[in-house]
Amino acid sequence: MSQRQDRVNELLRREVSAVIGKDYEWPGLLVTVIEVDITQDFKEARVWMSILGGMAQPVLDKLNRDHGRIQSKIMKRVVLKTTPILQFRHDSSAERGVSMVNLLEEVDKLPKALDEVEPLT
Image (tube, rainbow, N blue to C red; front, side, top):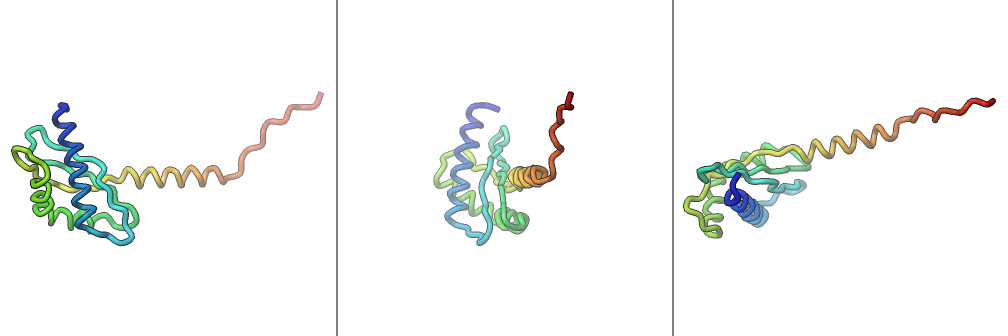
């Protein structure tokens, strides 16, 4: 990936996050823009979202329906030759991390084997 793509990815991540944070509200959910992956021709961008606290699909459906409005707001803030078409996707890595930590905590609560006792001589 080129440095330009990296810079555009980070710029889009910040701007998409700002627009979503300002214009949308999901009570009881934590919605975060994790990463943006723009194609090499800069025409499409996949926006990876972390959604904790409930069902992710309704949030993704709403964002994908409103992608044109989000794009137009970003176009006013970011000067690019063409504004990429945004596709919102779910990134479940945070949920997997939380479940892994919970699983490790459960394992830690299990009874432990006794240390080897040295035989008496």
